[in-house]
Amino acid sequence: MQRRTLLQSTLAASALLLGTSLVAAPALAQGNWPTGKPITYLVPFPPGGNTDTLARVIAQPLSKALGTPVVIENKGGAGGSVGSALAARAPADGYTILGGTISSHAINVSLYSKLDYDPVKSFTPVAMLGSGPLVLVVPASSPYKTLADVLAGSKAKASSGGLTSASPGNGTSNHMALELLAYQTGVKFTHVPYKGSGPAVQDVMGGQVDMMFDTALVVGPHIQSGKLRPIAVSSSKRLESLPDVPTIAEAGEKGFDMGSWQAVFAPAGTPKPIVDRLHAEILKIVATPEVQARLKNFGMLSSNMTTVELADYQKAEVSKWAKVIKSAGIKAE
Image (tube, rainbow, N blue to C red; front, top):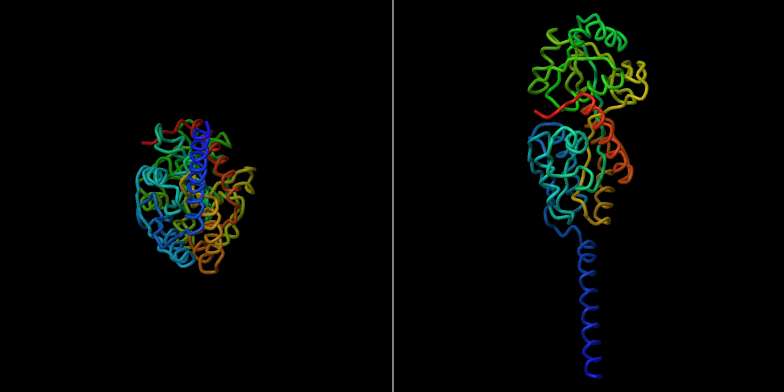
């Protein structure tokens, strides 16, 4: 009896020590993070776009702040879905972060019939980088000078599908801004998708298409040259670069607020101390004059959301775009 009790006691003590070591190991690893191992910053879009450019603006100072390399890896495809799925499957150890967007983390889940990740459950929000309002523009020769003119003009052409609106492609944030306007106003428009903003802008300037939504970075030079007329901006605040252009809400559509946002995410389960450190360092970088100037140049508004606020905002965005996409009957091509 005594020998059995001694054996049981020995086994129990061993189990306790083993359990303690298993708990201590992750805690120790978190405390030592980062160890000098490179951090992969996955960009789920090809090089050269806004998400890629912003990642490169963040990566160098983040590497300096953490004392470890931050390496950009581009994995484009399916509106950001391919790279996002890779990030979702990565180890939750702080060595993989993702440049998520309104497309990859709010729109795609309703746009695609199958997605290899859940935009909310598969990730831990780290930091909101900023939001790029879109500018509704028409050709300089257009008779429409206000949002009310645009809505009235489209109503007048309802039998033929309403005014035409260009975008860089089906399901893009530019397309979604149009569908949100249609959803909130009940006015019909005809979407005309292109392969990129370049050809879309050219056809709007040429008068082949009535209007379009795009970033200030894309349409700003053409507004300055007098080839495009700005009607309104999609955000709740006016753009510094276009201070005389009202928001859509100011122009009469209360509650309209839409921006092509960019944020950093980590795989779900990434330890909170690591997420908190990343969050703090990234927000410090975003607040620097150099990055603020770059954001302004991109036509973006910065944000200092907490991780909890970002999580709540993302969930609200998923819900909002699900309603818009269902109403419009949109599916990815």
